[in-house]
Length: 462
Ligand SMILES: Nc1ncnc2c1ncn2[C@@H]1O[C@H](COP(=O)(O)OP(=O)(O)OP(=O)(O)O)[C@@H](O)[C@H]1O
Image (tube, rainbow, N blue to C red):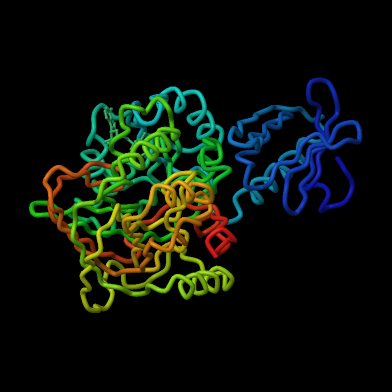
């Protein structure tokens, strides 16, 4: 046993593959040293489990690699004399690993076997399940058998999990939210069942918003978010059409950008590269978006909105679950009719819609407004020029791109066969009205905010 009371629990010498290894707990990480050299360092966030039994010490950790972090589990031994120290050490490690949350979450998991490149099931079995098991989570899993299967299950299932894990893209999250929203106890279900997406779809926009552009496609990091993330409030948009009500958590679109998404379903095998192919095709066609729109504006001056966004970020405002009036529509302003011809409108509640497009850089979670980008008719060259910088939200500075914060809007399609995209899913081409409902749903987040690198206007558009 190492000397000193505090050292006794924060440092332990074990034997691993016949060699002595020192495990020590620093304020920010678990450190592994061998032969006086640093062998590995795991932030507490990436420590899943530590336990000791008799003379065995078992650790399960996530080794961080860009886009491909992985589970590392090993069992080392200690001498008989170190048994008590090993127990205290592993307890200390667990306290640090689960400072803000309880271990052993019960996870209700949905896996879409056909989302993205169609590898959802194998990713679940080979990479996700072992991580949840290593973290001693309770798991109850449904592999979806058809579209709307997850919606049907979430509509009726008991609310006995800590979190709903969704292995897919944004479409299956849309289903799960709508399933919860259709329950008689919808408000309680949405408030008590945070979602935790794992990126096995194409765009995986939600994961990119929660984990950032670099880690957004990292399955293991998304698993850690499900295991340890904290609930963050999300507004939902109520979309009312003639015969139906739909809840949208991410985006609604018509025109060029809806055609990019819904017109490239057959290119699923390409992953998120399909959107660039679709964009270039739609750019070539440059069709007008046949709609009229009315909006209830909260803000429309880009620079003022950017300043507001910056001050919100720097004041460290967080949107963690708080008590408050949920789902109440905000106060009403006047409806304004837009009459200029447009190429598309794109409305949304999260900055990224895909890794290479931060369509709504000024979006903050739970602010009770919808960000609405409207692209007036412009040249191919202008749109082409905007590709560079779109991953940093720069396209909002195209002079002909209007950017509003709205509390509601109405769309009347002027044809009956245009694409209407709601959270990337196809909906009937009929008139609809969208209203925002503040803080109705919850999503697990490592940081309590969206992770973006928007920094205001760059030289190109000045
Ligand atoms: N077993 C299944 N068979 C066929 N379709 C399914 C099944 N399970 C779910 N779906 C449907 O698959 C569609 C695509 O799912 P999802 O949107 O999550 O993936 P994606 O489109 O690849 O990703 P993203 O939305 O991030 O681009 C959804 O409309 C969903 O309803």
